[in-house]
Amino acid sequence: MSSVKERFLRYIQVETTSCEANACCPSTPGQNVLGEMLAREMREMGIADARQDEYGYVYGSIPARGTKQQPAIGLIAHMDTSDAVPGATVPQVIPSYDGSVIRLKNGVEISGFDFLPALKGQELIVTSGDSVLGADDKAGVAEIMAFCERMMAEDAPDHGRICIAFTPDEEIARGTEHFDLPGFHADFAYTVDGGALGQLEYECFNAASCIVRVKGVNIHPGSAKNQMVNASLVAMEFAAMLPPWERPEHTEGYEGFYHLTGMEGDEESAVLRYILRDHDLQKLEQKKETMAAAAEILNRRYGEGTVALETRDSYRNMKEIVEQHPEILERARKAFLENGVEPVALPIRGGTDGARLSFIGLPCPNLSTGGYNFHSRKELIPVPAMEKMVDVLVSLICGT
Image (cartoon, rainbow, N blue to C red; front, side):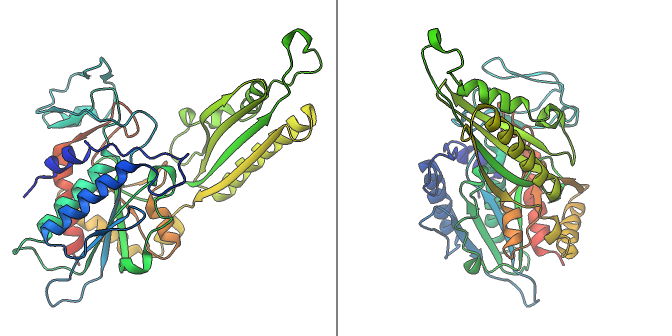
């Protein structure tokens, strides 16, 4: 039987950074490689219907056990990692964290975080400082796989049907585009894609993305007066027209934001890429209106067609769906408490596959993985937290 630590260290060796520029699914080949590995390991456990489909999704199920009627419950995690920093992971294991500054191999330091003192004495897995670790969400993948192995044992407790899915491209908001909901056969589900141990999340942002395209007029700078429209400078004007206090670095809790994720350009053309987030759907719509108003002002200033917006909705706040099923949340709370973990309900300052799934008929709150500092070179996860989450999943599935 493989430990959850062994599984995690094995899975993060496969680079699975997703790429929004690629239209295929999965968007990168490494996700197929990991998916094939997971499907094979599930079959080796005895999960007979484990498979990877044409889009890279991995599915499998464990039949109900015992005579008591219980619900069919799904567990879901995603295979891809964020492209915020490089994804070629070289992990380090700290056998017993001494509570001091963590110095990574490339000189990056992990210090000053309020969660660090509570991790003293625990075994930690960190990065070399050159990449993400991949705990988001390979920790969730490893925990579900370790759970499956335990539930396939002869002495496993009674339970209802268990439905497993590993999805591609969650980090680029495409994790459910080809999800086989009719074939999943779950009454409800949980994504295992959260942070610190004990987090139970059923509120998330409403989300949209926006591409701002600027068309300029280039001419030799020696004769540019009253002729040149520098697209890069117009793009900078656009960015300056958005409220700076509504950026991620100045917001918390339920506060939404405009987040510039990338930019490129020259005198003739420029592109700004934004994500827009707010827990309140009306406030998200207001953010879209603010961006449209900024584009209109610049078009009046520099000529119609100078600035064009492409806005796309990504996902909605799962709260309005999940709150209709309080028994699902109560089941999760009991599972944490049975394992000595205090559940903490927090709004997600992001989104999960569960948000989209909730709106297409599968209520799906989010559970912790135990990790910290996702999407960064300072990402880390305590091994005891992963082990505890496997216990929590057993209680979740086998509880009443």
